[in-house]
Image 1 (cartoon, helix red, strand yellow):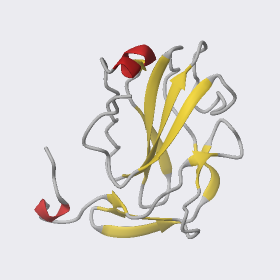
Image 2 (cartoon, helix red, strand yellow):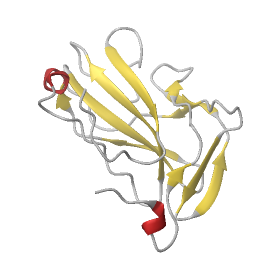
Image 3 (cartoon, one colour):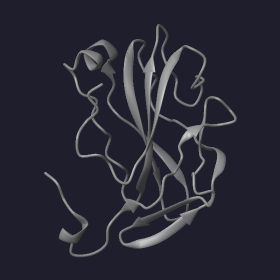
Length: 156
């Protein structure tokens, strides 16, 4: 199902500019680094907000991710500019690559705006969110800037 903002009676929750989600100065964390140089603009329930870029402002949280599995972490922000992360359900990396098991986007927490996501494919060792480095060969990481949660799951 596709829902357009003009179908809503009121409001809308969307990210209005690229967040520039990227690895942070501390390699176990991520950051916003908006290409516009001004930060991230977003709306929650129809009200506009702005947050300046910052280093290490995205800390992955959740359960330890199993070795050889892939997971997606949804980066959300609230009206007080607090960034939180929602961990999805992990999928065996080989099944995702083969196209036999899609990776579904997690549901954002209430009254937050999804601004990005981080897909982590763990190698031979487990990945501990917020502790394991997002670089260095033990994981393969993909960063996404989002307008909203995509309608379709990741299939590769």
